[in-house]
Length: 210
Image 1 (cartoon, one colour):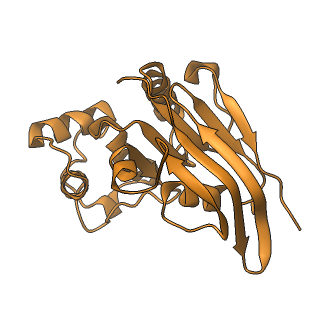
Image 2: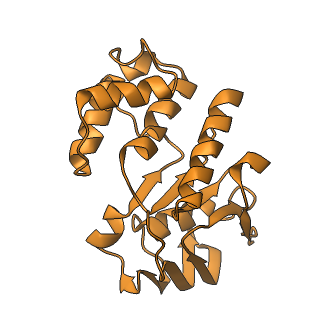
């Protein structure tokens, strides 16, 4: 993955939810080779900020650009977003969920490759059962498998370690470090601190505003 000169840049963002200002005149940037850990107490606006940066929500004011252009199709092609909820259809199997996601995001992946990714994530034998029968940690692994399937410059991850065991956390941290080392970028928030195996971390803090 090549390094890119101009990254994700947010300027003077404001967000209001239920008549409360979560943040105001916030500026932020994410560049190639960076792992940024977004911190803040519950209610500070972490998820709201991530959704705004992804283009899923609109700020009250401010601008966001990707590679010096307003967010658009080029941004969504370069982005993987994994939300706090896994976004897995419980009626579908893990394989069916991944196949649907790949079609939705124009990702070319053979059935054999989908099975290989799920095996790498410790889901051997769980590929063809409805996801509603999987544990919370297993469903989280199905959601995170998108990181193994799509070549995207930027990963935005909201509480990605939720329900993962120690092995799963270590595997994800290794994956994040490899992505950043290859010139990608990761923006994540979590209730648990990143370990040294995740590599160099830059912190960005939000405060709770009354």
